[in-house]
Image (cartoon, rainbow, N blue to C red; front, side, top):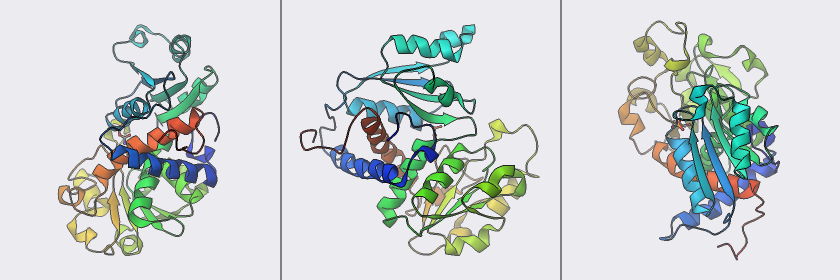
Length: 310
Ligand code: CP
């Protein structure tokens, strides 16, 4: 493993499998009544969030605490960032407090990469602009593997607002590393121009792809990042690219439905689909804690989990 986790492309197949296998071991501990391990006692993890988050922020905090690390939560709102303090000065302030790992979410693509040049500890990208969200891809792969077994040859369809989605890019990169076949389905206006160089196929016809899919991952339509009209109306988007009961009926019996959250219920996914037994959306949140525990454990010097830790 490298010192930082900035992009899913940083992970070799062996690195990714080591994280997923470590998360499997840690999941067993999460089922115990006492969930805490002493592994990162005396280490400090800083959660540095410049953008809103529910799942990622809480699960990194829970992950670090379950490994007995000291946790400092920093939110840009209410900090000296609102007085104009730069990312570099904020980072150096946290560095002075002895951070061993900095988990950063930032609206600017590339912010975690810059941060990695300024601090001595490990940097973990918790979502940067429209660029990447590698721990989301890891928890998604962990969830798929638990439901479906090894991912080699599995067909994963990712649907919706790919243009603004850091989740889509990280998933495509990681799933290709793990041997899955990924198809992106979106209106042409919601695909990045560079998509031709991504290791995946592209389709505009969701109904044609659904029967061949083992996994259908719906993406949130990110209206807050849209400064133009990318589709005629929400109703039209939903009709062409939304996952409702009729479309789910086209999927094979064991296929699963995923969504990274937060969801626009009734737009990209019908509420009854999100709440159905095929849906892994709640599992994804729980798996986020164990997967992020594995990432922190391995970045902060852990090897394979030894008996003394367990
Ligand atoms: N999936 C995800 O990143 O959710 P949050 O924005 O709530 O962290």
